Length: 133
Image (cartoon, rainbow, N blue to C red; front, side, top):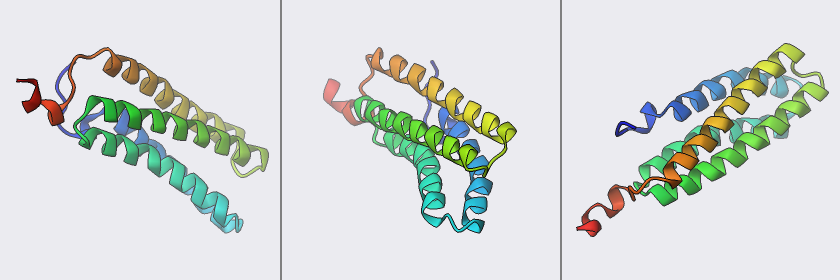
């Protein structure tokens, strides 16, 4: 795998950003229906996915990054559940539910694969580079 120097170059972060932008109109619908708390929960969990990928990457430690990705995977599960709530309450159509759910599920599977890859890597991270000498 090539060295990645910026979190923006990670496919999982790009997918998370795209997902956040797709969720934003759903959040606006929730606000229009005066579901303010639910709207903030959805906005928070979708935003946390991309934010925690960035934060974990910037820690420059493989173990801390893997830990952050585990948290991200949990946030993705939370977002899936919120999508069911939106569908069950007729806030989103079946088509939109399927599209968003597929996006979250794809991201979740890529996260799982990336976690497995990182766990198998001998690289500790930049934080430990000088300590390894």
